[in-house]
Structures are given as C-alpha cells and as structure tokens.
Length: 145
Length: 162
Image (cartoon, rainbow over all chains, first blue to last red; front, side, top):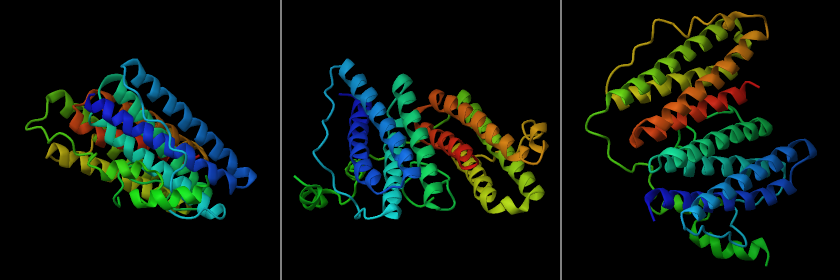
C-alpha cells in the first residue's frame, strides 16, 4: 500500500458517504432541484467506481460502503437538504484536495478532477440555496477561507 | 435498520456526514511533505504563470464591475478570490508576483456587447481552469493542492457566472 493508495481509499470512503447522503437530500427537494441532486449522486457513483477499479487493478481492495452514515443535522426540508448537499461537496472536495499531495500522474488527474467537480457542484447547490457568495476562494480547504 | 438507529452509533465516531470528516480527523493532513528547500525552475515558472493569470483575471473583473456596477455583489468576491490566489502563490514562491504587462488582460472579448462581458469572463475562467489543471499535474507534490484548488475555484467561478 502506497500513500497514493491510502488517499484513494479515503476518497472511496468519502464517495460512499456522499452517495448515501444524496438519499435523504433527494427526498426533500422539489422537482427543479432534485435533478441537481440526482446528477450529483450519479457523478459520485461514477467517480467511486473509477477509483475502486483503479485500486483493484493494483490488487488493492477498496473499502465497501457502510449500511448507513450519520447525518450532521436532520434533513427535514429543502433548506436543510441543500445545506447537506453543499456540505457533502465541500467535504468531498477536501478529501480530493488532500489526495493531490500524495499522487502523481493518472492518480493526481483523478484527484484534481474530483476536486474540480465537487467545487462546481458546491457552487450549483449554493446557487439553488440562495447562499452568497456562491464560491469559495480555495475549494477543499475546510477552515474558513 | 433505520438511518436513525445507525446514526446513534456513528455519531460517536465523527458526528459528521461525510464521514470523510473521519478521514480528515485521523491524520490525513493536506500538509504531507515539507516545503521543498528550493523550488525547481519549471515549478517556479508554472506557479508564476498561474499567479499572473489570476491577477489578469482580477483586473478583468475590476473592469467588468466598473462597467456594470449592479453585478458588483456577484463579481467582487470572485475578483477577490483571484487576488488571494496570486497572494497564496506569492507566499509559496516567497517572492512578489508582479502583474504582467497585461497580455491576457488585453483580451478584447471583455468589452463585447451587453451580456458579452459575463460570457467572456465565463469562458476566460474555463480556459484558466484548464491551464491551472495542467499546471497542477506538472508541479512538485507540495504545490499540487494549492494549484488544484485554484483550478477548482476558477471552474466554480465559471459555474457561478452561468
């Protein structure tokens, strides 16, 4: 196991959690925003599958998904659902950003694409939630920018 | 088993969804390798190029805000982010990054039409995100998180303008 493998394993865990999180999120969104969540969930699935495959090719078994993950706050309405979606994307961005330092070549490409896509989705959900500004200066940096 | 039942147990672990948070808390610091003692010339060039582009983009936003003050609330935070990017790279280089002679800033598309300026900024952000992504893939690992975050910020700016 290399440090790059460790980072990719952490990313698989984050992607599993993100996919889970979009269940309760999607259930509370109206027709116009639920498509955003569906697209986000599909993207996280595709990314997770790509990382799992990458690890498998090296003989590394990726972590499997938990049956459920704790939510940081109850998701009771559209506002709390969008808040969670934003958080999911910010946290996923952080995991991918952290992966950049221990990866090279194709692995770093995977990581930077994961970071960029999460940042774009976070902006989409901030727009849907009416959060301003809709961007942060350093996506993936969890402390205040 | 319901989410709720599971939640009671897992709240002990991290308390936060994206259990990614658990990963972050357990020592997966972004700050892996120490800062290299000296930056390699190709890396320095790549970082300076990204920083210059950030300053050029900031100047274009200044221009757009001056021409269209009712977009200020949306555009000013993006302009400020570009300046922060240049400053962060400057700290990494431990040197001042001076604005370029205005090569990219002179792009004529910035002043085209009434809905043109935002569209032009949007495509400039997309192109700049691509260049930062390329730089992120090329630089020494210590600089990759910073340049990757800048690429992601630029891509999200394009989204914010859509």
